[in-house]
Image 1 (cartoon, one colour):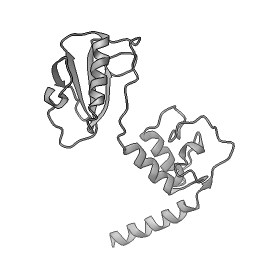
Image 2 (image 1 turned 135 degrees about the vertical axis):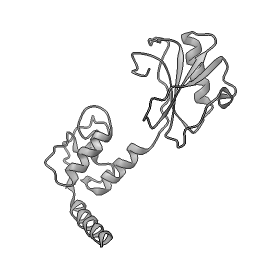
Image 3 (image 1 turned 90 degrees about the horizontal axis):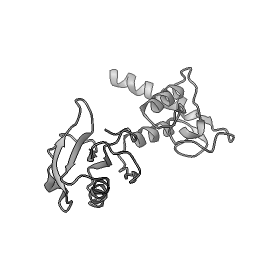
Image 4 (image 1 turned 60 degrees about the vertical axis):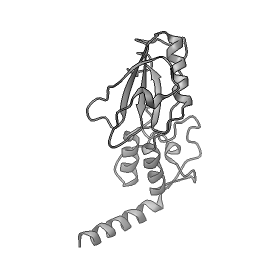
Length: 188
């Protein structure tokens, strides 16, 4: 009985959401895809806001065009589904730091994509990368991504950037991003 009720609710919700809303042509051309609340980034808050909007709650989207993932000019359940999928996808993020950035302690921070169970990473995993002194797992409790600090034997900005480049060139599928430890980038 419970399954039947859930199926009926899902069917009604789908029918309501299939109607959708046409996206206004005058929406901003300068938007971040998925940024429903207009705070300049695409996060779970945007998905929740759009989901509330789709289900008829009294909320306002900052930019309708940013939620049109199917790019068909209509906001509907398909856009919400694509939005959720995009948020949950771990795309590799290449490092954009330069020699002019502030480096706090010349440690390379490696963030691993969501994995269960988390594993122990060693210098052997980074075979071919020179100058590794030791690797420390610094993942805070309850984080879904594993975080590693790689300490360098010879510390300098140049060596940090070289190590980042060398790690990125290994194309290790589990790596989400590699960054220096810096205050300015917000990654510590």
